[in-house]
Length: 240
Image (cartoon, rainbow, N blue to C red; front, top):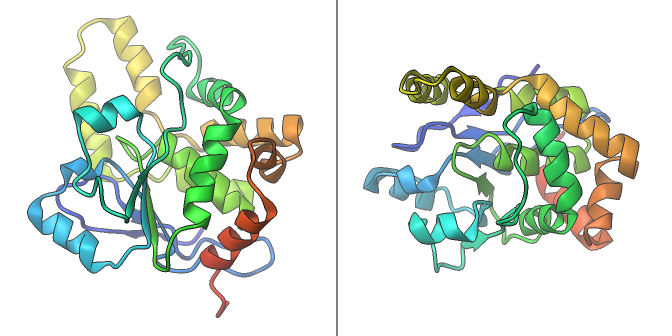
């Protein structure tokens, strides 16, 4: 498995360049083309400068509108930034289910929102694209997984990448769990904070079985052929 590059964006906890991931036809995702991150509201002034110096084409914030209003991005209002929530306020979330099962429910309910998130990557201006939510694991991890699948990265590699959460993020989750006294609540949160490869495999297997794969699912949500082609062109390293 290709070792991915963790990025230091103070004070974010979970930033990673997806460049280097292999595609099924022997090519690779281009370095700097797609970056997965936790909440950019954590950025210090120095971190904001680092992001600006990266000359990104787009920042895709997949948090809810309410989260963005309560905790606005330092880039909100700029052409660089767009908010593409991948859920609706009344979407169910059952803490008694596994994380993968909750992903499946969210995907089935919101193909249009996930398609819009992937389209935001595909149609960005020249430069890398950052996708982030709050923790950089669930919503951003799912959008990134869909984009990587369209680019031809095998499901096993996508699932392994999904599980690659930084040590700083894991320590943060552990601190939050320590503060929870109720054992049932702690158990549910431990599942929510988890990042196992089989969680993403559950979601991808479901899309394959129900929609014929990620592309069929995203087309059901309204993603057009031009966006699919554009996404592949921008993510795959032409030199490879």
